[in-house]
Length: 144
Image (cartoon, rainbow, N blue to C red):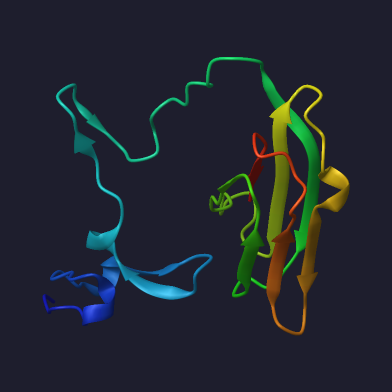
């Protein structure tokens, strides 16, 4: 069955009952045609996100502190940080319920300045994850 998708599905025009699946973690219906597709940049096809990450030059970065919190899979994230923030999805095979948040603070050796002022908490009533700090080192990075 071919039919146009509604506007909130990013302009998909191919909808088949076998191609509609639940988008884990976000709880929305997504059309298979809207999912990530391989792309080419002159050297063959690659999937988005499959590029190898090259560490930046300079001192080696390491994990300074980690948190694992159980949360609602439909909650919100609120962050106020003077440093880099990276948000990535969880592996659905490792965490099929999507009810965890893994937070890691990374930085250079000896760059743990301001970690005591970092607030990482989950409010069950608001279903909101908060990561707030004004004192963390600007060269640090927070990965969620």
